[in-house]
Image 1 (cartoon, each protein chain N blue to C red):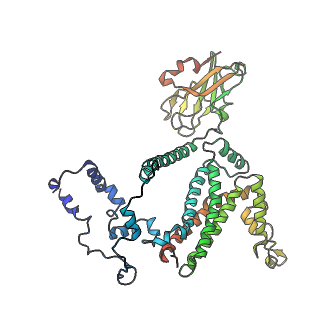
Image 2: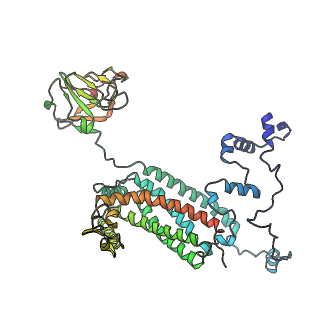
Image 3: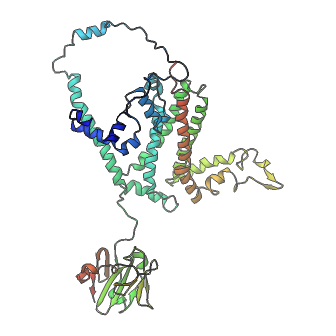
Amino acid sequence: MADEKDTAGKEGTEGYPPMTPITPGGPPPTVKHTPRSNTVGPGIKASLEKKPAEPAGAVSRRSFMKWTLPVGWVAFSAACTSSLVATARFLFPNVLFEPPQAFKAGFPGEYNVGEVDTRWKDAFGVWIVREADGFYALIAVCTHLGCSPNWLAAENKFKCPCHGSGFYRTGVNFEGPAPRPLERARIVLADDGQILVDKSLKFQMEKGEWEKTDSFLKA
Amino acid sequence: MATAKPPQPFLSRTWEYITDTQIWRSIFRHGMPSTNRNRVLVVMTNVFLHLHPVKIRKSGIRLKFTWCMGGLTFFLFLVETFTGLLLMFYYRPTVAYAYMDIIDLAEQVPLGIMREIHRWGAHAMVITVWLHMFRVFMTGSYKPPREFNWNVGVILLVLTLLLSFTGYLLPWDQLAIWAITVGSNMARATPLLGHEGPGAQLLVLGDVPMVHAGSDARFALLGGRFVGEGALLRFYVLHCVGIPLVAGILMAVHFWRVRKDGGISGPV
């Protein structure tokens, strides 16, 4: 409360001399008025005395403004808002120059049992692993901070070069800072018999999603 | 003290609370501009307002006198800056991508008229800057003490034309390439600095010419002997960064000088 008291007078002009108009260089000017008579001029007088009779059906200034003013403001606000929305929409392109999320990865017969196929890693960021009973597609994004791990065939593991996270060939993490296994992508057979991998549908082991049918393609 | 006051309506209480916060008081360091002193403080403590005159003659902003052409030019510069910034999100200044990105901007990206706004704004800005100069000339506003600002304005005119010229190459279509080829060929004839210009043959070291097709003003402008990858990148950087930066600084000087030279000149 004491503070309030202190600041109470500060905003006003207390302590300042009364204001005089500021003019650069020189004393305040003597205000020059062109002498103006206080009597109302003939034109104004006339307009004050008799209101112009409105012809029937004519739109008065007041009723005209009563409708055009709100309509004008609404139209102006709508134009501003739609420009803003359109500008925001401009930042979201309709066409992307990125590799597609889904791709065909050849016929099942082209894969050798027990091998991790690294052919699709550069273009699509996916390893396809062929086990005895089928296929699964691992997404080549480390679950630690999003780097691309490498497949080390000699050590039979995926190893991330950034912080040393290691994953078994199943995708399960076993060393380094990665908190959870690699994600698997949807893998199915297309109509033409080729393997179809779709990264837009992901399966996480810790959620029990590796049990789902599309996460594993039975040979 | 507070209890002695009659109960205030909700809105004015809220307003009082907001204007009493540290955030508000650190931004607005004076009261409402309702007194002469506060009006001056508002102008003096605002970086944008302080470029403008504290007082303006009523006749000085009459549309018939100014045509508002300087203001319109500045407005168009802001439009060009904003739309240009948005276009930069999609446009890549390389021979492989430039033309395709322009097509992409027109046909695939939402709000395909963004580039057209930028282009029409550029045309309009060239027109308004000329009309502004015409008005200043016809009203005699180039006379002392405004002769310095006239010269700043002439430089700004040249920069506007250079912005237009450099932007013309960026679509990288046949029109752009050949227009810049023709336009930059004029630099060959620069006195001393162009290899076909007067005086260039005087700059020799023994038998070796200092100014030749690979070392003259045109070469520096294009970054090569013809309009190619180097020219596209140089024009892009000049268009988006170099010239707007210089123009922005000179505009601040321009507006500041208008104030310092007594505001907009009045009718005689």
